[in-house]
Length: 150
Image (cartoon, rainbow, N blue to C red; front, side):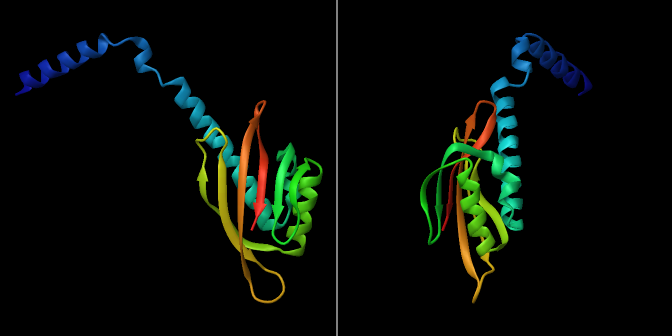
């Protein structure tokens, strides 16, 4: 029995010795994708915190030069990186959101996106709110190219 184990170990080690060195290293593309997913995840967490605090300025530097913004019962169109945060800040100041959370996301796409919901804590009965967000990589950083509030 021990002889069979010793022969198996020897056979496996000889087989592994014949593998090219590259096959034993992690795939570089896989590592880049993993790093990219973690960067996108950090961006989404930052945006989620800002929405919950009603503080768009905490992620205002993430807007692309031109971003599509659509706000419930409000404006819709392409706005500059300076205008977009102001439009969203006006909305979230007038309609504070509680318990917002991104619930669906695709972090592996070339243009990652996320959707989520929360509750508007405005006048009257609470209303549900949905947010759709799309990102794109510009140079070495992720930027918001679309932000819809439904």
